[in-house]
Image (cartoon, rainbow, N blue to C red; front, top):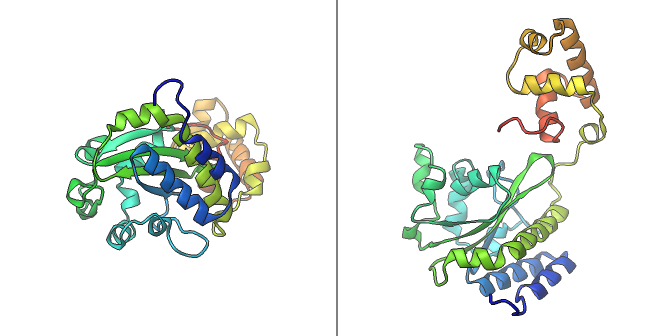
Length: 262
């Protein structure tokens, strides 16, 4: 897009921001794809879920976007959410990125599991590549919005350079519509969201999340084992869970512990 030219995505983003209708949102996402030369959108609202994201009428967004039945069945039957190279990038990045089906495995190698043979974004299945926008949602959910092409009529790098910011906004707006309409979305935990853990409780839970025993934590923070257990029990009560593992998992999911992997 040359400097000074009007942004062709601007009116589409305004339309996406103003609608809460699934059909309209899907149509707008397709229009965006047509403008940028990546005409096949797709969205995943939660990569921990083996099932494809569904619209309020029960159909998957993959179906609404026009993805064929065999693609949709492959994803769910073979739990491709667990081996998707795109998903692995999304889990550790927030920036839009491009990928090509000819070398997608090098982004994050597929497992040796037999499910790998069912990976569907391949040249043999007439997929050239695309652009994916990671979106990180509340409670630790990782989502994405992608626009895919069967042929690379325009270099993907050019699309990324011209439309990265707009596509990031489009992905956020679209997934916001999905989240608001998803009756099965996990509710935000009041206990996790409203609880104020003490600094020491957070510290102890962080070490639990990293696999340390009570005795090891006591040595690390220079306190007694009973003191460590006291802090962990307080955290468990505040988070309304029954054991230290649950407490660490919930606190990590709610973003209380901060990053555990660097």
